Image (cartoon, rainbow, N blue to C red; front, top):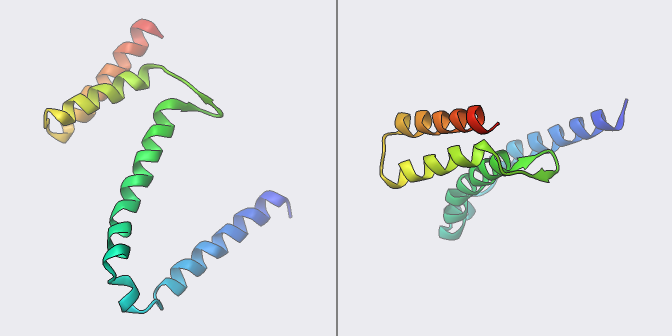
Length: 103
């Protein structure tokens, strides 16, 4: 068995253990206001990191390309309180047009 498979299986077991034993945490720890605030912010932080990596990263280097234009259009549309479909379509169109004309 290769090291990669050992790492995959080990990580899977750790994730399963965390989920399994997470149900046995007493309610008093989970209802703590600090824990509730942290649990509220974790998905936001993870999604923001994912968007940043997907927008500015390419393997192990930093890139500036048409994705930045799409992200900029999406941010402007969100600031203007545009509906979600408008944000997505506008961002995709801006990225595609930038790639077509400059790529």
